[in-house]
Length: 214
Image (tube, rainbow, N blue to C red):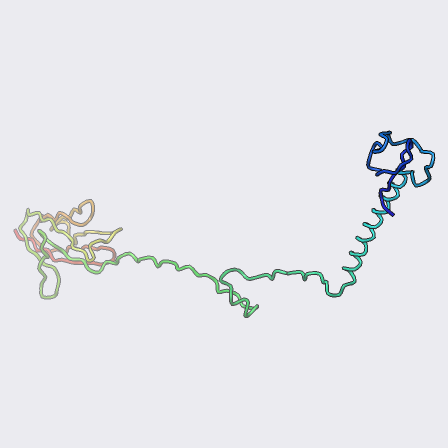
């Protein structure tokens, strides 16, 4: 049965396509019922029935396709992909041995350079070391009224934080007055006699015999 059938003209009773609004034979507008018309002329009802039938066919076809895909063993759902928990970059050993832990990073601590230590102290006059006697003790002789500037020669020379003391064993024979930095002193001969000059630098003591003549 065709979905859209011919209709009968209500004027001339001839059949023509239901798609036409007027009869191609007499020109009459479609709508009137001819004298020989019958129930198949109910075009509106036939169109509705045909449309419903088409919808039912399409729905049935869709249901069959869905059921067929579910029952087909060759159609399987794609497997789910799980991303493994990978170790951090550089931690390759943990893949081989899960109990492995990286060694702690130990930063090198710079070793501080120890300050220089005083090794020796020498007595000088005019830049030259004072002579020593046979026992290795400094010894010099001067007249009463003479003033000498006695200096120190330290090794190493770049020692900082020095503690220096100058001392006369007999202030009546000679007097000693240290400079502000302590690296030299003025020694003044006061009277005839013999006394000892003692200089101590950071725990190192140096002695010199001072002989004063009239």
